[in-house]
Length: 316
Image 1 (tube, rainbow, N blue to C red):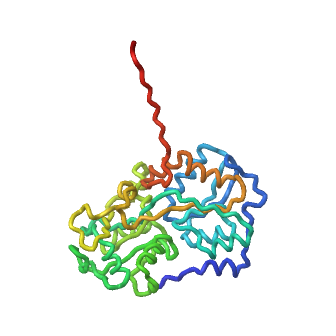
Image 2 (cartoon, rainbow, N blue to C red):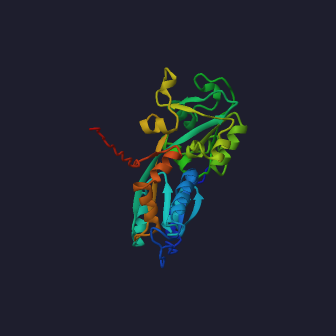
Image 3 (cartoon, rainbow, N blue to C red):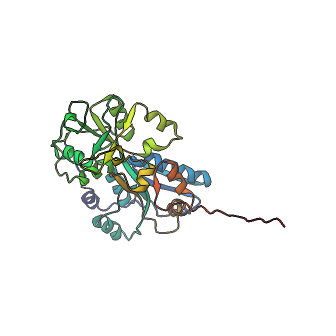
C-alpha cells in the first residue's frame, strides 16, 4: 500500500497562510469561553478525560476538539483554526516560521510520557518481539512470522496503523529510517479503535496504537477493547535471555524507562494572552491534571505534588 505524505507546510504557504482568526475577538479567560483544539487521534482517550475534567470544574469553559491524524492537527494550528494542538512532537523550524510570520505567540509544553503499544489477537501466541526484529520487518527483510525468533506460527506479517499521517506511523518510520513504504505490508484502519478490532480478527496482524486506548482501567470502552487481545513485550536487546528483558507500554515500564517505544506528548499553544488554553495548560502542569494523566496509565512529566502533613502529639 502506498502512503501519501502530506507536505503540509507547503500547503499552508500555498493557501496564502489562511488565518481564520480563532483568537480574534474572543473574550475567553481561564474559566470561561470556547476554543478549538486539534488532537492526534492516538491521544483521544487522554484529551477527552482532561477536557471533560476541566469543563467539570468550570461549566462555562468549552473545548471544541477535533481528533485528526497528527499532520492535519498541526496544519489546523498553523492556520489558526485551532488554539491548541496535542501532538507527539514539537514544531519544526518551518512550522515555527509560519506562526512567526503571522505575529503569533508560540508555547510548547511537554505533559506526559506515552508508549506505542504493539497488539496482537489472543489467538496469536507470539507476544514477544525485539527492536532488531521490528527493524527487520520495517526494512522488508522479515516478512513472515516464522522468521521471528521463537515464533509458533507462520504466515505473512501485516502492520496495522490508524492513519497514513498519524503520529504512530510517523514515529515507527522515523525510528527505523524508512523512506519508501510502498513495499511494506501496511494497512490503515482509520482509527485506533478500528486497529484493535482488526487485529482481534486477524491473527497475522500487529497493531500499533496509543496506549491510553487500553490503559484506563476504569473505562468501560477500555475494558471492552482489551478483550481477546495481547499487548506485546518489546526488548531493545538483540538476544534477550529472560522475560525481564522485555518491557510493556504501561506505567511501571514507562516510568523506569524500560519500554523502547516510549515518546512524549506535547501541548502546543498559539494563544497570545491569558485565555482558556492557558488555563488548561496550567491545570495539567500545576494542578490535578497530572492525576488524570496517571489515571489514564501514562506518566506525567510534572508529577502532581502530594504534601503530607504530620503531627506529633505528646501526652504529658
